[in-house]
Image (tube, rainbow, N blue to C red; front, side, top):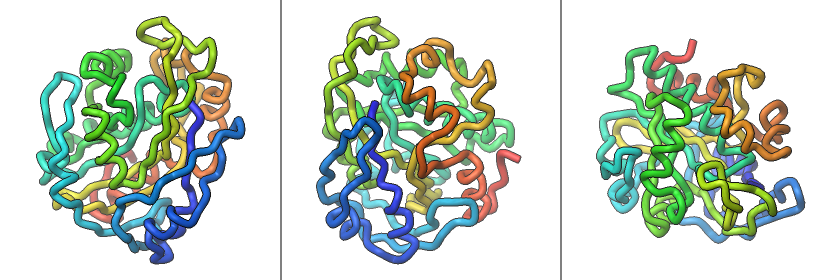
Length: 275
């Protein structure tokens, strides 16, 4: 998948510039391959914040009830909402299971964050949550099959209807565009040619236990130990395109790391995980 990354938004927030005015007046950097996406003005509220020590931006924005009440489904088909997670700190990112370029790396990082949470015995207080941007294909059975490949349920995956997911991610400044899939790209689950691709901005966020949006970073995931034989399921490793393999070892800037997430959790909430 060709990704669209709005990296300068982090700078805009740290300088006290509204995301609305930034996104409305800026052109995103085209993803490799020359593709670009015209991004509509978001519904994200004006945000101000300060630079976090290890990357990203610390902020404090209440999430409206209309967003907190959007119904999502987990890998077991159980309905939940961001509002139902109130009282917990949520590390939230966007992805889709059909992505062959970046999202498998996002999943690696979110799985690592979930593992760190579990090792710290804080699973009842912190959630590592990846929510799809592709409600049409990412059914409950598909996200369940995707997580089973990792053989690790320390991180959570959510999906929902296309309209609900669009509303959720629009609030967080994530915009999507349906595009033609790469010819010859066979879906990891069905073995058939992928019908379409989804361009989207990459966001990693932290929501506080009071349901306030507290931290934001943007960019490609940078994984630790990319040569590890247990980095990701072999089926997904084989599914990576050449662009995906390049990003595995040298992701296009800007990037986000698990260490930036751990540092933000510590800086904002005095939560120590990840070593």
